[in-house]
Image (cartoon, rainbow, N blue to C red; front, side):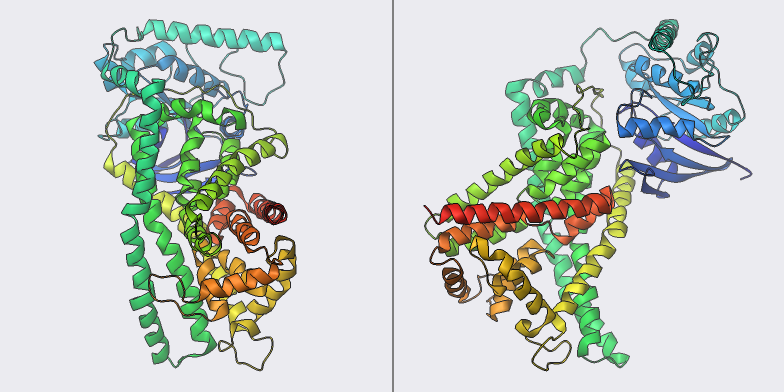
Length: 633
């Protein structure tokens, strides 16, 4: 391997960029954010007998005229490319005009270019197969036909990239001056820009006519299916059924896996760690507590998310590769229009009602970084299944005759919050989120490729474990230390009642802030602090603060009476209003640590921290309003 080059992969959405990237890099890939942005890029290494290539998969775009952060990153990739960087531009043989327009803009930037011709087999099925040699002779750029599903043409593509690395680009027939102008050059007048654009379109039309790549005129199998999937009366029920299926898959199919992971960490892993520490002379005490009840529990928490992420990434990958994702976006587009989002945002938001972590991961289906950010900030307002478990217990305590209705109202409130906060953010800090008309290529239906799908899943899950995992573990260790450090009573570290620990003292300090909502008690404050680690432990934390034992699979014995006594006192005789305020607070006040860590990984500390502040302020206001209004009813 004596030669090397850097490759930038350009292409429209849904033309096979990710498939090519996964096929050539295999497991040697990782995700990064473009500098100063939340735009996610994939980078990897392609090793061939000819040399080693550093490959970057850029966001899909139809044009280098930057109207969004994604398009800006793609345009700047050409302007900032180092000498010898080769642009591999994917051209969809079933609809080459869009791809050729992007190719013309890429070559304008001055980078060596190679065309990777995709989906030619599908074009052949519609009787307009593109001849790669004829296309190359027409446009003056090397054209390599590839089929990533069967790894055809990849060696030829590597040879073309090495050959093109030292050649000054030029498009045949484009005209003098066109194809030589670097991106970022002096600004043109509107008239000059219009003339340049017209010449580009004329060149594209001439190139398409020369290769006789005309649109198909007969209906295909995909067309017949789309008559059902895109029709309002049938498409919407099918889409809702698909989302419901995702939800069921995420909750039911992963439940045994999550239980197995939890059982392993709570059983053999915990026992094995304690035995190993005992062998090296650490028997009990605070150090064993930190390692076993802090670090190991944190690692186990991260591990429980892995099955969920694997399932959801696999399901989303199948929907994308099969071609249905584009249809679902069209069906749901009108629903999201008011918030400046397109139909693709419905999927992660609905997944959020199962679990916020895979929902945040699912934002990768959105092509625009601003829409990914807005959707990612809204997802924690969806009422996940962990919150649902808390609602059910608390509703039975405060509303025993109307528990189901109260839980339903909380889910309605969750939907209203998603819409309301979305509109608020769009009109304030995210004013730049403007909904563009949904322009999306409708790929033909096809079977996903298992190998490519598996590599994509491993890469995405690995990014979560590396990015969010350490934060989750560190935060849980801090919570354990807070519960283990005594602040009064002369107790030893790790052997202290909860009320005498730093955790208890901190909860007492927070309790006064809960008085306006009728919840000014340290037991309730402690449960909310514990809920930051995981919402489902809120009730268990209440039991722990009251030192109430709980039989397996049941509500802690006596907990209902103790909580009702406390809230009756703190609310001044209005326990129902305070109880509802408590549940509103559980819904809104802050996402769990895992969700916050994933937001930080995807969007950075600034947005993740700002989101937490927004949740705390909004949660306090809404819970206070719920109590103050409720006690008057």
